[in-house]
Length: 344
Image (tube, rainbow, N blue to C red; front, side, top):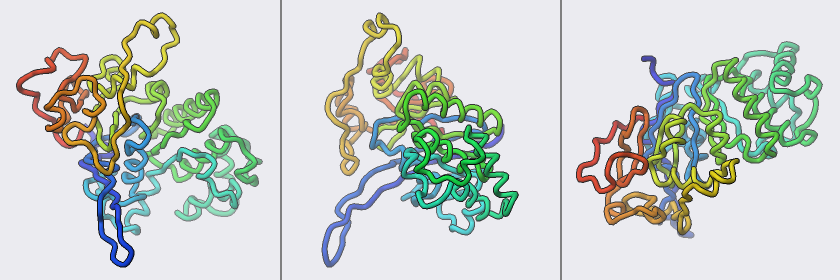
């Protein structure tokens, strides 16, 4: 078996909270990402889902070293990125690119489209002069824009067109990995479908790997080979797409999927809804034990005192829960299965 393109092990990112006027001291920490482990193979799409504020965007930035992790390991193409100098990171950055959520603020309004897409090529010495312009115009055509858009500014485009520009910028350096941080959440539904289909076509043509972050579970199912569910800084379930959607193990995954509307009114009315009580706890003071127990309909005393480890319930399907759903294993079992290793 070939090694994964991306390996993340026990990644942690805490943001210190400081207080004081003359002498600052740390009074707390925001637990944005707390021990996340995952893998991504070449040519694969891993969907990452969860509520707003659960740490998805921070995880993406920590993987790309746009923000320095507190601890943990990130290996890309077999090389450890955590602690690597900016000079050593620079050649690797060609193979790691990001598509940002907001197509309006992610583009420099003072630069023309040709500069936005072409500057990375020039910076890495891939092209210059007439060849640079030709390559930029080729990328514009590849993402569904026209070559004459080369000299226009971002404000002259719609939201969907701006996101296409962002995709072209991500493709400029011919990367192997693209992290798409909710690339369609700010777009109309019809435009979302166009962008998702474009990303799928680009993956088929160029052999790209995606870490695809989204709120829309329908979109995630359409584009992903595997799906990881994140809650309050932790991965609570990771599975192949069909396995997660057909047989979700973690109560949080069940709640997310039960909120997805079904086109058939009868099936939609007949299914059981999982309604969560309360709000997401503060990441500055996460609950003890299972972080989901304060909102879980099936929580017991053990959930508040013991943190569940990720356990294998089926080949390629792991979840962290004391009382798993949709499984033959009893919720009050005496001896839980052995947890898997830190890398999924």
